[in-house]
Length: 155
Image (cartoon, rainbow, N blue to C red; front, side):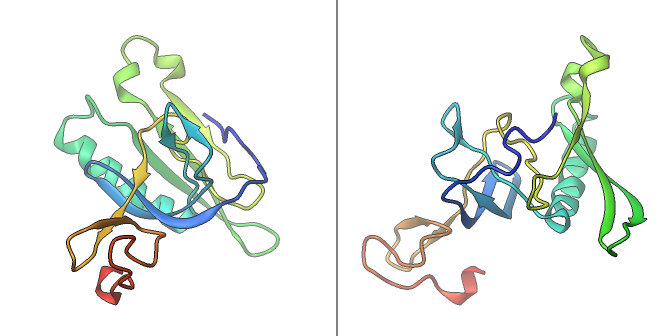
């Protein structure tokens, strides 16, 4: 499972994304790049570490039967002092039928971002709730209904 769009040039935005009990996580997203209507986010290695811990926590609650897990395996630093890591994505629900293809590496794109679940998972924009009661996507700084600025406590 490698990055489906390495180095893609796109009108990307910084936002937050989530799936049900997973997230929200800071991500870089091209809002026009969709997989079956869902977002294809890219994450920093630090965010991947947090995401990986959460996937493992959810999988442990369900005996690894329905949740994919992400794992970061550290390997020191490279010649430039940057962390060296391998990111592995395991699809436990496919293990029984096709164990040879149940796991794959997620390579960083040219910006060093990882497409965890990009073109596979049902990622959506995380929302913040305006005091007026209207939701807005995380990257929208102002409420589309009343114009209120996203409150600092939403961070």
